Amino acid sequence: MADYNPGAEQEVRAAVAEFNRAAREGDGPALDAMLGDELFYGHSNALMESKVVCIDHLLRGRIDFRDEPGSEVQIHGNTGIFHGRTMAHNPKPDGVVVVPLDMVQVWVRRDGRWQMVARHTTRLPAA
Image (cartoon, rainbow, N blue to C red; front, side):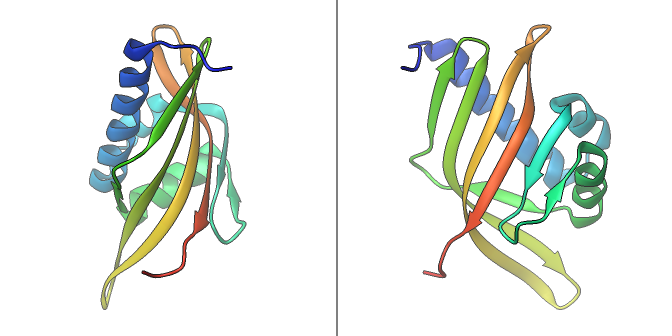
C-alpha cells in the first residue's frame, strides 16, 4: 500500500515537470543530475536506453513532453511512482510529430533530491 505523503507527491510532480523542461530545452547538466546512473529508459518501440544514451537522444531531440491532466503519484518510502499520459511533441525537419503515450516513471529520493531510475512508455492509439 502506498504511503500518504502529499509533500513527497508534490516533489515527484515537480521532478517530472523539471525533467520535461530539461528535455525540451536540452539542459544536459539538469538531465545528468536528475537521472540515476542505473537508469532503464524504455520507449514505446521497445528500445531500452542507458542514462548516457538517453541524455544524448534527449539533447539531440529536444522533445516537448506535455503531460495530460489526471496523472497519479504513489509514494513508497523513498520511492515515487508517477503514472500518466503525455503528448510527446517531436521536432522533425518537416514539422512536429505528436505521439500520445502512457507513461510510468520511477523516482528515488537520494541526498534530498529525486532521481529517475526507470521510465517506460506505451504508444496510445491516435485520438
